[in-house]
Image (tube, rainbow, N blue to C red; front, side):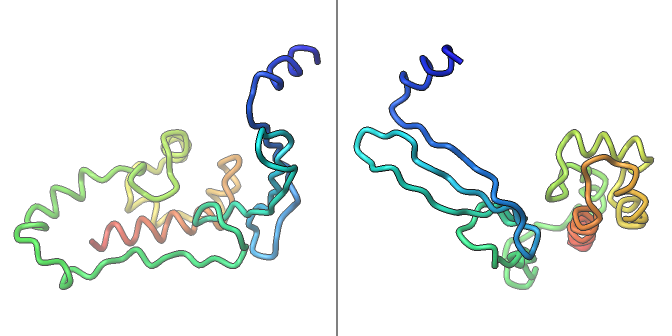
Length: 148
């Protein structure tokens, strides 16, 4: 305990984060409290951790990230599309990092096509810490990558 107090007094700003539970759309509600600051009074604010990122409200929508090819006027952008599909890995899917890709590989999923065709309920049961909602979001992102 003594070591924490020494470190705490060496900081100019101290902020404490508290978990408040889940809101109606499963975004994680948090509270940040300014414990100590040289020129700020003790204050607190509420924020949410959502699928989109950090927001001040739990009412957020996933932005439509699809871009129509007709709107982009770049010559030769999609000439080698078949070769590029082979270069797309699972980590290119939004929300899948190195660890999640390794867990998917252990389940026999190593390509975007196998991810899209997989049963999301089975995957969520077999991979610890991955929800059914997350699997379906990965599958929709993989479909979007395959369509481009």
